[in-house]
Image (cartoon, rainbow, N blue to C red; front, side, top):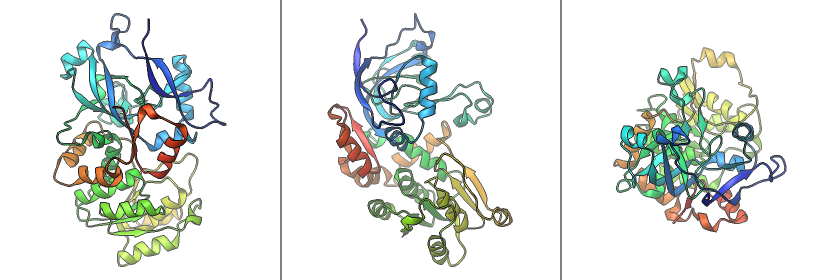
Length: 387
């Protein structure tokens, strides 16, 4: 008989995408390794999560703002109704396929995090080293069952062994989103640069610390939320600009924001702008705040079309736009390990400031829809605790 486990799921048979919100705590079959029935299980591993971070994409699923098409398409392909949510984890290997053990050196008892993109290894992008934009990738917790559960089965080749003697386990659970900030901040060289970060949500807050660690001489945070503003200051932002809220849904740049940045930079503009919101006004603010010959890093996501102001000036000013998604596998993870294990104080700051010394930990087995929604609305980063 099949064994069951608790998991937080989106169930399309019970929860209409357009008229519901939230996840359901449900009893679902526990994943197993059965290599005699599925040869892929030779490469797979069963992990028992210890901590699991709640991502902006999880918020998007909770409020039905994003990833519905990917969830539905993948569920239809699998012939099932529910998706286990969650992709940021730290856990212990409790069972391992023979090939994963032999070829990857993994062992039962290893503590691991995971890359959330499960790549094919055979498409053109994978073959030339751009596997972070794999043509056929699955995303854990969206198109592949995730880690908001008592157990998760994953391919061994997406696991990242983690030393919890050097990185706090609660912090180690958010290595994946921290890697987003690392990827954004390594797209161009930040040493000696003046950097503006448009949007100091979780990834923007991480980016402040990463930019400083990689040598940025000035970091300007643009953020309307007072709580996030205060965190940004504590994490090392040199200046904070509070953008007018009425401009949030606008299309064109806001002169109050861009003029303040030009003033701070003595009329020149920043060398690098990191756009972390996806809002049209913020994209144009980032471009308008960047000096001639500078770089704009586009990380924020928002569906639909956008308008770029004065594209002729963008070209004439020689401003380069760079799109960033996920993490470079495994290059970004090595940078991440270096930053979190090194003497930059980042591990400590994430614990004390972003995770508020454990105040944002949420007991998995005490899940309650209202209290969880309150938690994700009130904090930049919530982490499930399973013990």
